[in-house]
Length: 97
Image (spheres, rainbow, N blue to C red):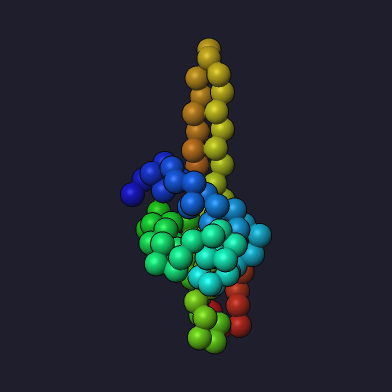
């Protein structure tokens, strides 16, 4: 899946917004974004395939975190610039990584 396809969904953008604040587990995301667990897992899998999130275990909880900084720049004509870029970030190290 391309980066544009992954980011072309409002729910996934909302998940990324939440994860930009701090890593969260699925139940936190479902509550914060307002969706069911199955839908959250589907969107998280899509974001993981696109290389935007990964996960780690802390106890019996699976936490998701951002792994890329995403920048979107648009400019009107005559420049007609469209840039969508994702750069890898250094994920925080947790005690169970």
